[in-house]
Amino acid sequence: MLLPKKVKHRKWHKGRHRGLGIETRATELNFGPFGLKCMDYAWVSSRQIEAARRAILRYFKKGGKMWIRIFPDKPVTSLGNEVPLGGGKGSVDHYVFPIKPGRLIFEVDGITEEAARKALKTAGDKLSVKTRFVKKD
Image (tube, rainbow, N blue to C red):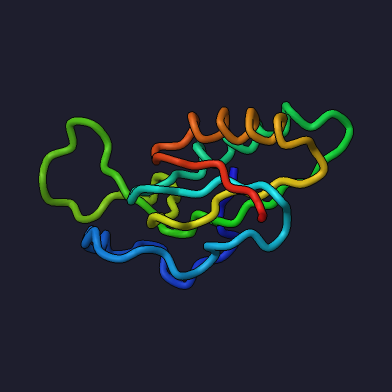
């Protein structure tokens, strides 16, 4: 799974889900001719990214290349079950990437459009956001 090697602050504030705006970075295909674009607001966990990555790799037959355009660096904390109030903030449980609409998640190259469409559709099913297949014009 994707995890940061070193962090400046171990625990972050949760932040507000404003639901405003669209992504301005990583919105166009830069590496491969096919990609998977996000169409929703969500937190995508490192487990979901790993599951989607494995789903894409299943369609590469001795070829192809894949780029992951997101990296989960936001820590999410949690307390154990049946822990009473007080006692502070919980320990870091997992890492997520807060994603906005328009952001490219994956790019692939070296496979046919049909295989890329299938692979990215399967990968999109593993994620907690609505996604769309995009290709270079």
